[in-house]
Amino acid sequence: MFGTHEKYLLKAISENRVILFLGTGFSYDATNRLGNNIPSGKKLAEQIWGSLEYQEPYDGTDLGKLYESPPFH
Image 1 (cartoon, rainbow, N blue to C red):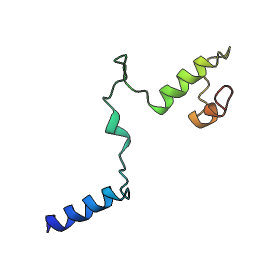
Image 2: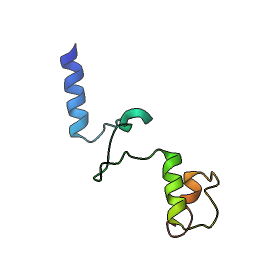
Image 3: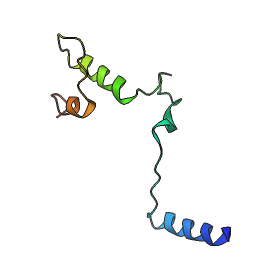
Image 4: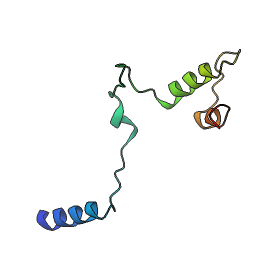
């Protein structure tokens, strides 16, 4: 039975018809080139907020909204 599934999967891969869905914990321990952990959505939003040089402390604006702010959009 596994042989049939294996053949199907190999054919699907060769035809670029495979999508891999991973949960949020998949990259939890991953690091970037500097050895830092990849930030979560909230942490990334905080970092973007800081790079936009707002005078106020981070106010909890969600990541998507920040991404729409100049200079990103």
